[in-house]
Image (cartoon, rainbow, N blue to C red; front, side, top):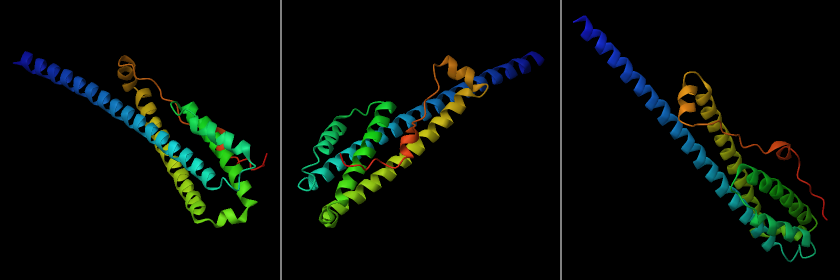
Amino acid sequence: MLVWIILGLIVLVILGFIGWIISVYNRLVSLNNAIENTFHQIQVAMKKRLDMIGQLVDTTKSYLKYEKSVFTEVTKLRQAPLATAEDIKKANNMATSVLGRIFAVMENYPKVQGIEAVKELQESIKDVESEIARQRYLYNDQVQTFNVLIQVFPNNMIAGMLGFVKKLYLEFGEEVEKRPDTKVA
């Protein structure tokens, strides 16, 4: 009788251990997928932002006709890859610079600011900027949760055995904190 009780307890412990491993694995997979999804949402928002910058330039083209460097930068920006966090960081820095220059040029042409399409595009760009900021916050929050989960004991043993590695935060660095360069070339 005692042997059956001990054997039953061993089986319960083993089943509990297997259940815990499955639970940790499922949580890691879920977080990993959420991180990838959020990263793709950031890519979509960045693409939307780049398209709007192009639309803004197209809408104000007659006023910006002497600003060839802006057109060149917008063309480069629209062709910029967005596959990695580093690509997104570079595109973000370029977009911030280009937007600053466009807005500075527009200040020299008050008629442009009165065009309804320009106002709508500026407002839409602000909305997309907010969306990108929210998605960055969510991405970094998910990365933090994931990294903590794979680093705490005993989860770190399971994560290591299953090949889960620490994720990198999406950081834009000091460039985000700086005011965009609005000097007209």
